[in-house]
Each structure stands twice: as structure tokens, then as C-alpha cells.
Length: 111
Image 1 (cartoon, rainbow, N blue to C red):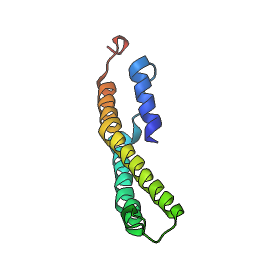
Image 2 (image 1 turned 135 degrees about the vertical axis):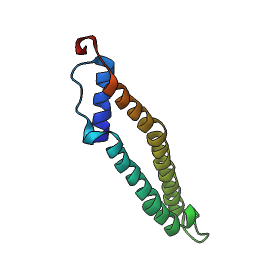
Image 3 (image 1 turned 90 degrees about the vertical axis):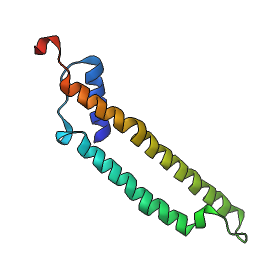
Image 4 (image 1 turned 90 degrees about the horizontal axis):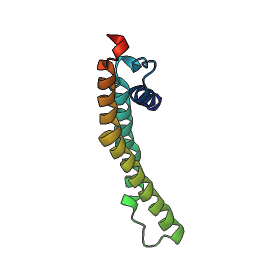
């Protein structure tokens, strides 16, 4: 829902055309949902994986396959955290800024 809207406002900002309808009154509403989902994943799924897998430390008596699985869980967590950082640190601030710009943008034919 939010990514297509961001693409639409970016395209409008770059190319003009028909101004996209504001998503749920403001981009802040779907952003709140994205942030909630990220927090949920951090607080439940990732925390449970850590607890279940003892922070990805392979027990000494386990076979090699478990080592590979635990490594994969650790890599998955790193990728998820990187995704969260990109979304929270780059995409969301840029999308908010872009929505503000297009909501106040005036073209010569608007005057």
C-alpha cells in the first residue's frame, strides 16, 4: 500500500501529471502501520528466535547442519535489521518530505 503511493508521488514530483490522491489523509498513517509492523517483528519474531536458538550459538554437541541453520538465522536477522534501517532512516523521511513538497507544489497552470 505505501510503496505504490510513494512511487506515485515521486513520479508526480518528477514528471507532473495528475496529482495522486492522498493516502489515508496523510502518509503518516500508513507509516505508523509500517513502524508498528517493524516493532512487532523485533519484539516477537526476532526475540523468540534468539531465545529459541540461544542467540545463535551452536551447542557443542550439535552436528554441522545446525551450525549452518544458526548461521542462516543470524544472516536473516542482519538483513531484516538492515531493511528496517533503510526504511526508517531513508525511505520514510524522504517520503514525508516528498508528500509535503507535492502538497504545496504549484504549477503555472494552477495559478
